[in-house]
Image 1 (cartoon, rainbow over the protein chains, first blue to last red):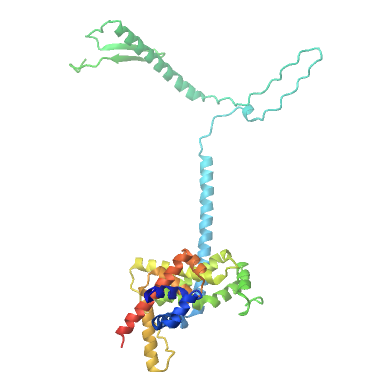
Image 2: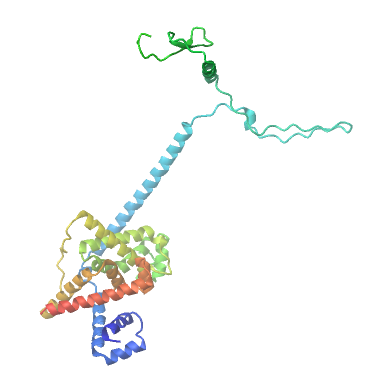
Length: 207
Length: 190
């Protein structure tokens, strides 16, 4: 092993106890011994605190740290309070503006009472107890919605049926009249409303 | 000062009292470590204003997180780790703000009355600063925690978030580089 290789072991031996081989080499080799001495001096020099550290106004430094820590604590508290307030506000907003479901029959909310045990006469057949349904019925549609939705559904159904009949009539090879633009007439429940299905015109716009 | 705290109170007792909210115990703890932390910060940053900022930040974090410190591990290693991080943060902020670090405004009195020794001491101090500045950040921190603060390899590894093997290698590299720097400087200086 040459000296550069020993140097690595000398460097490591500064922290731990030098092993026997390194210690023996340091006694024999003046170059490596000088290297070890220099390393020890370097370490001693690093340990010396810098001169500026002696002239710092430490009480002022401590006071500044106290002030800053107090300020940060206050800011943390304010942030926590604001976050809690925002959470409460958001929760109450969501609760108040949630779309309320329709009126639910009371029976749905009422906990189902235990089925009453029927009194069975000795000479009668035992009756099967009636159990209340556990699934609540769907809430009924509001009357205005019901009024609005039913004619639409009727119209759609009528129109679909008519289209089906027109299609069947076309399949039956009954050609439409060329001169009539009206290819369908749909009457509705309202006598004043009639839906006309017109043929697409390619020529005269007055058609 | 509390009747419970005095300069002779053991550190573990001070820490326990400070964790219970004892203001004077915390003050005592800071007073015990302030010079060491500032010296470490000075060596790490190489600038007095940055070192003061880092030391103040370290003590602010001590105020805010004193309950997190394990009594059996002690305050010293915890403070050193926080100081290294604070120095890193200050350096990052400084780079972001693109400010040129100002030289220290205070004129420090020399400890050596002999002019020859004074010149030599100044040269060696300047040489040491230049040598430390030439080291990579992690190697410099590992070396300073070991040499200045006397932390064990495990404590240095915990402070730097590295493994013990890495820390040993970093310290060896730093010593070798420092020695090389001093040798080259010795050849240049008369």
